[in-house]
Image (cartoon, rainbow, N blue to C red; front, side):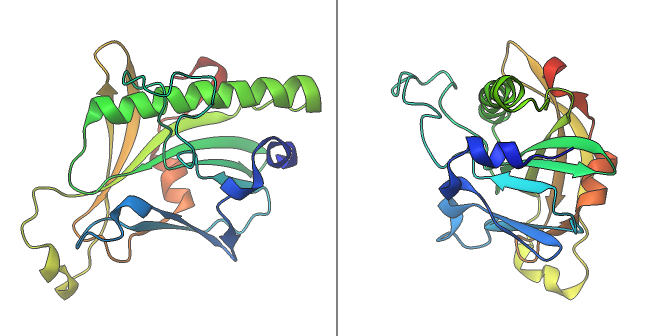
Length: 208
């Protein structure tokens, strides 16, 4: 199984490069804000069968959409990862948030991104003969703990991520989301195995 065809479909400038055994997903909108979540490092991906794209590089996701629509159809998540491990395929939809987490807004991003990737899946199947609709899909949110008032002091002891599954809603549909939180935005690292183990997966063709 290979995901090279995905690279042929996506615009190459949207690829987020991986180096050695890790990939870094950045939130460019937060670069000027103190104590914000600027980047997340996913480690333990020593596998050439991975490709990651910045899905919010273009707004709207397609020029055929109404660019002034405010119902949630235009925004993509920060990144989508296509990953194959031990013969099994995964698609991870990833969003980075600092202190304000609007579940409706994030849900809409996941729904819009999923619809877009479904289209990519049909192209992969009918043009390249590759089926990604059987890949296990999941939604991941990396965020900071908004209840913590001592963010700057957490260098004194290890800041271990908390991981939990939650149900997000946009008032019409629900989606299962794996929340990974830390108190400090610095050195936000987590292993790919932890994500795959904790997330609730569902085949793309039935998800969300």
